[in-house]
Structures are given as C-alpha cells and as structure tokens.
Image (cartoon, rainbow, N blue to C red; front, side, top):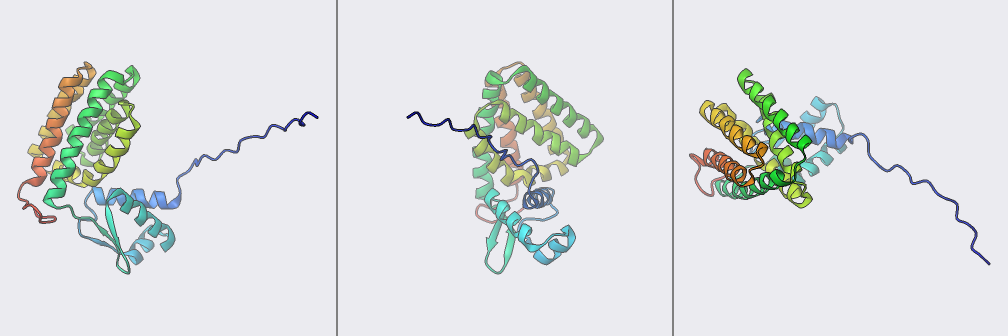
Length: 234
C-alpha cells in the first residue's frame, strides 16, 4: 500500500529579530571599556551597574560572560569581572597578528569586493574625514573602525572575519586612546587616505603594505614607555 501523503509542514521562523537584554548590556559595557570609562584593571561593580543600568544581576552576569568570551574581562569567583589589562607582550603579539589579518583583508577585498561594497567603504572613509575635521573623536572612531570592518567583510572570508573580530576587540580601547595624541591622530588619517585610495584602485599589493604599516604604527605607539611583561605599564 502506498504511504499516505505526509502533509507539508511550515518551517518555524527561528530568527532572533531583536537583541537579548544581556547582548544589549554587553554592548554598552563594551563601549565603556573601549572609550576608557572602565580602564584596564578596573573591577566592575555589580551592584552599581545594576542600579545604573536598571537591570537585575542575571542579564549583567550573562553580559560578563560575553565580554569574557571577547577577551575583554576576566571572571573570578566571588570577585566578579575585571577589565583585562594587556601586557606589552600581549600588545605586540595581538597587533602583529592583526597586521597580517588586516593585510589579507584589504588584499582580498581589492580582488573580491563589489562596486557597492567599495562605495560603502569610501562613504565611511569620507565620514571619518569629516569627523576628524570636527574633532569629534567618538564619531571619528566609529567611522574609522567601520572602515576597517567593512574592508574585512568585503574580503568575503568568514574564517578571516571570525579571527579578526575577536582580536580587534581586544585592542580597540588602545586604538581609541591613541587619537587623543594629536600627531598620532593626524598620522592615522593620512594612513587611511593612502590605503583606502589603493583599495579603490583595486591595488591589493599596495593596499596591503599600507594597512600593515598603519597597524604597525598603532603597535609602536602603544608600546612606547612600556616594559615587556609589565601589564598596563605606560
């Protein structure tokens, strides 16, 4: 006997269309770490944060776990979460790897990016320049990092994106802080002008060399005055 026809079943929509509360809290804390409100070595006060953010301890603790996964905080039993303090060796090693990842990103983007993706990168770069002229560091940094991230996405390499995102998060606070040095900020803008122009011309080899030089200069700036193995020395 033929099997009875199986009725067609609709596939449930499993997509999460809105971020969960812990994710929103984690993003807020992430920004406060990046802009230096919570400095390296700071213990995050659970009671104060619950009061300030108007949340319970459960989403805050879940946010802590997300930040620990990002490599931004360290969790200790009965102590809570502490903003991670990178040693000079950490800074050198992370920027060295980022240099390779950003170089591969821009070289691949020169080959694989669509015209629309290049136009988006150019738009972010223009916003960055505009915010630099206004001396709006917060808006400048958002557009600057947006440019780097858009280049990475235009490489169309999920494995590269996964590796890049985690390492980049760990040094965003250092990259943000470097803009408070006027000379360093001006040099960074000039670097961006150069590697974005090379990318627009789809000159992958030149773009890679320029962006690696840019990341190398960030490493050098953040290593000044540090002693190898001394966390947070500056």
